[in-house]
Image 1 (cartoon, helix red, strand yellow):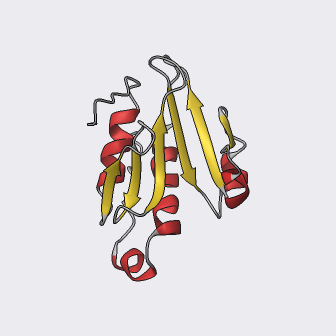
Image 2 (tube, helix red, strand yellow; image 1 turned 135 degrees about the horizontal axis):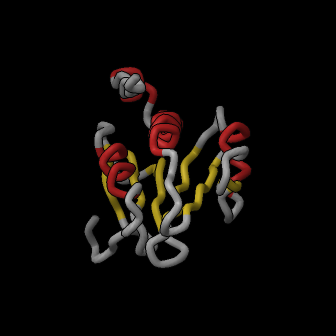
Image 3 (cartoon, helix red, strand yellow; image 1 turned 60 degrees about the vertical axis):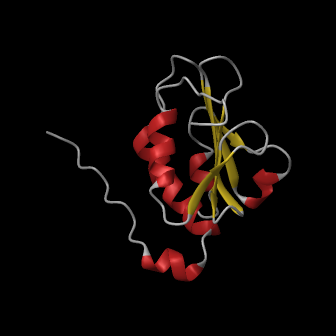
Length: 132
């Protein structure tokens, strides 16, 4: 992460990497925290920290917000964004974030704001199979 901002939570780096794999994605720091946007315009992911080493993840989930809000640490995003399906997940410095689920939600968030033509041309990432 650039612009002098570093998230120390271990889940921040894989979420950032997953977001940057989507076509047209740019990283911006509008309020000093990383925001991931399509073509520098519409945000689909915000990362931040409410305390040293913690992690805050906000995504637009128009189809599964209700499901996501049942997860531990989830709440409607502040500033009225929750009414539009935005959900914020918070994890303390030692809490383990459910990365597979968050990356699954990330796909929905990106598609919710991506132009339809771009979204249709990009296949969803393949889910990792559990090892037995």
